[in-house]
Image 1: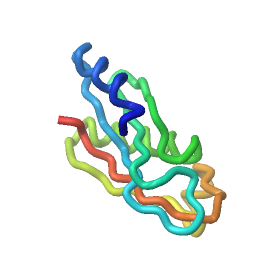
Image 2: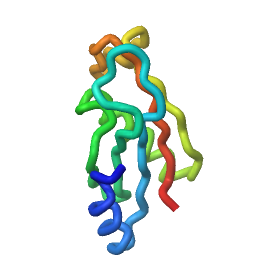
Image 3: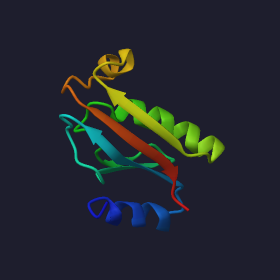
Image 4: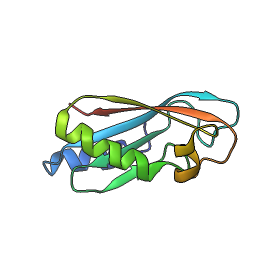
Length: 103
């Protein structure tokens, strides 16, 4: 989370709404550890990473729903899921990503 704080603070100073996605669980091989975070500004800017680029586009799409509804989401990506192949998580593991609006 520390790696994204300077940009998130600037976005908030600029009046942007921000959603933060955080890896909350990993199973087997995972590209990023628990605690890795991706911040998404309402304008579309992003910083950080939850998977080294494998699932960020899908997390971004889910963040748009969080911006609209305010309701957090728990996402799971893994090699067994058809979605995992489509968003490119071929590392053989699974990750859970919690996506929430930063208040």
